[in-house]
Length: 314
Ligand SMILES: [Zn+2]
Ligand SMILES: [Zn+2]
Image (cartoon, rainbow, N blue to C red; front, side, top):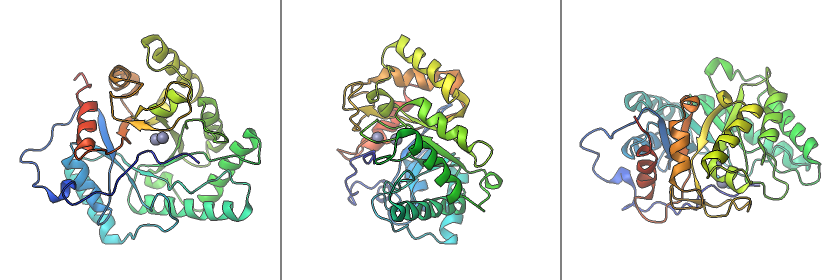
């Protein structure tokens, strides 16, 4: 399994932007959809208020505890309040990140069954919350070969979504590329494309590309030429139009290290320029850009959102 995208310390009261006075003026937004993974402490609808105060116009949340099977409590009034706040603040898209325990490539029948049930719960909650995207890591193939692992993940997604009409509610499952730790599926664009190809026409699917994972999996996104080559590769496999979300994370590890440790924007081994190139590439204007950066100091979340927004040219 991939590691948590962030070393998230529990938010203390002093740190929680909800406990501070609201901004006097609406925060500045850019021509790009920029956001950050946001805490839903106190109820999922609170994430929308927090995201707006952080200066976001899109957001990502968990709808279950990332390392436990139990889903968060989700009532109809909460869902309605989430929709109301999103409309009020123009927060779009709403992205839900699947719990890290789910492994749809598991070879243990009991664990696979549990994963499929949990993933179905993720899809149902995403539908209830009117989310546009549900992000999923393709899983870990220990005990299978990679090819069989990818096939099983695709089959498990199809099984988990049976009878649910995602297209009708405009929900798309996004397969995320991974850092390439041992047995993890999805560290190359080809592997992500393979899962998408198998599900095409069955379930609405597209891709989420994580900059940290791409870099530590060995792709060059740091040099200008390298970034152009990597985007060419991405277009030839997944297709740029199918990349609906970029997880914008700087990296602690070197290129090719497979070390999945996220760093603040501009302060890691990727640096600012690659983010500037992605954010201003007209071929990617349809995508959302969401940080999953650590919170080491109070205010780091707001600073990382600002750092991304400052790179957008117009
Ligand atoms: Zn990661
Ligand atoms: Zn990610």
